[in-house]
Image (cartoon, rainbow, N blue to C red; front, side):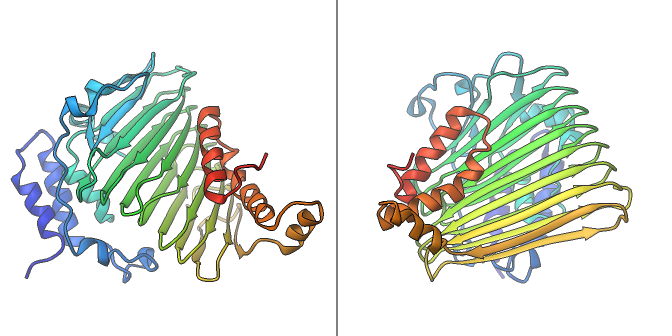
Length: 412
C-alpha cells in the first residue's frame, strides 16, 4: 500500500550515487521507517502535518544561474535549496566550501542526528549540497555572515538546504539566516553549529516565508568548554512552521542563550521546540520565547531542559510568554525540566494573557488613541526579543517589520 514517504524514496532512488551515498541511504531508510511525524508523537501532539503531506512536494530543480542574477556584498546564497557558490562571497578570514566535500572528509563534524528525527533524516537523504563555514582558531569577525535561503518560483516544490558552521577555539562570529519564499514551498532545513573551546557564536534565524509555505528547520549545536552560544529565532511567516533548536553543552563552563519571537495571524500555525542538554558541570542557560497571536492562529512552545548526572552546578532559567490579541487564537505551551543531578538551580514558567487594560487606560488618559495604545503595548512586549539582536541592521529591519505588522508605524 502506498504511503506518504514513497514519493520521497523514489526521488532518492532516482539520484546518482555520491560520496555520501551510504549515509544518505541510511537516512532515507530511517525516514521511511519513521514516516512523517503525527500527533501520536508526544513531541508533535499539537502540530498536524496531515493536510500538507497528503500531496507530495517534488524536489526543486537547480535554478538557472542567469535567472537568479548576481548578489552584491558578502554572504552565502541558497536558491530553492541549492547552494549557489557562484553567487556567494564569504567575509575575509572565513573558509567556506562545498558541504559535500567537507562531510566526505570529516563526517564527525555533524551535530544533527537523524536516527530519531524523520525530517532531519529526510534532509540528510535529499540535500543536494550545502555550505561548510569554518572560522579558524582565534578569528574575530567584525562583519556577520549572512545566509539567504530564497525561492525563485511560486510553484509547489521542496527545498533541502544544509549549513555546517565550525567555530574554532576562541573564535567569534555572528551568523544570520534569512528564509524567504513566495509560494507553496516546503523548506526542510538543517543548520549545524560546532563551537570549540572558548568560541562565541551568535545565530539569528529570520523566517518570513509565504502564507502558503510549509517550513521545518533544525538547528543543532555542540558546545565545548567555556564556549558561548546565543540564538535569536524569529518566526513571522508560513502556513505551518516548526523550528527545533537543540544545544548540547558538552564542555565545562559553557553558556547558552535562546531567545525567540513568533507572530501569527489568520490561520497560521507556528511551533517551536527547544532542547537544552546540560552535560558538563558549571554550565548555564537562559531562555525566553515570546508569542503574539491574532486571528484564528495557533502556536506551540515546547521547551525542554535536561540536566545530566555529571552536570552539577547547572544554572538554567526558561520562560515562555504569550499575548493573545483575539478570542480565537490558541497557544499550547509546555516548559519541561528533566533533572538528574542534585546540585543545580533550574526554574521554568509560562504565561498566557491579553493586553493589560489598565495600561491601555493609562495611555488613553494621556491622549493616545485606543488602537495606537494597544499597538504600542504589543510592540513593547515583542521588541524585548528583537532588542537582543546585536546586529544593528537586522535589529532595525525587524523593528520596522514589527511596527508594520502590529499597526504601530508611528510608535517611537
